[in-house]
Image (cartoon, rainbow, N blue to C red):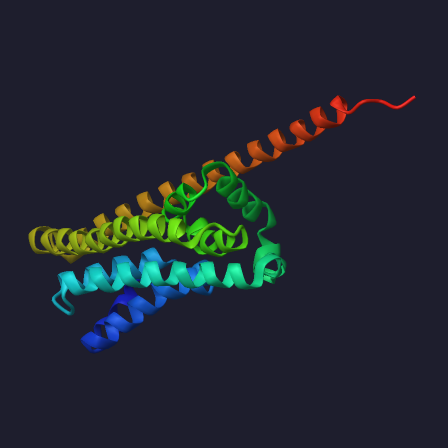
Length: 226
C-alpha cells in the first residue's frame, strides 16, 4: 500500500482523481475487487488529500460518483446478460458466496444493495446479482446511492484522518515509532477483516443448512402415493 501511495503521489492531481475513480468504478462494474478492493483506493485518495496532493472535497465527489456509476454499470451487466453472468469463471469460483448474496437479495430486497456496499465480496457482486434478479432500477438506484454516499465519504475521510494521525505521531516521536504504530493499526484492520470474513462464511454455512432442512421438510410433507 505504501508503494502504491508513493506512485500515486508522483502523478498529477487530475490523474490521481482518474486513477482512484477508475479503481472504485471497476470494482463494481468489472468485478476487479478481488485484486484491489475499491475501499483501498478510497482510503489512498483520502491520504493524498491530507498530503495536499488533491482536494478532499473533490476526492469525495469522485469516489462517491464512481461508486454509484460502477454499481449501476454492474446492475446493467446483470440485467442484460442474466443467468449467463452466473456462469462466468469468477462466479463459479465463488459459487457458495454468490448463493449467499442471492439469498440476501431474496430476504432483504434492495436493502441488500445497501448492506452489500460494506462487504468486499458483496460490493463487487451485488449490483450484477440485483440486475440478474430483475430488481426495479429506481429502487436499486436509491439504495445504491445511499450506500455509495455513506461508503465513499466514510472511507475517504478515514484515509484523510489516518494520514493526519500518522503525520502527528511522526512529528512527536519520530519515524520509527510512527511506522510501528501504523503497522499495529494495519494488523488490527487485517484481524477485523479476517473475522468479518469468517462471520460471513459462518452465516453462509448456516443459510445452506437451513435451506437443506427446508428442502427435507418439503419432501416429507409431500403426499405419498399408494
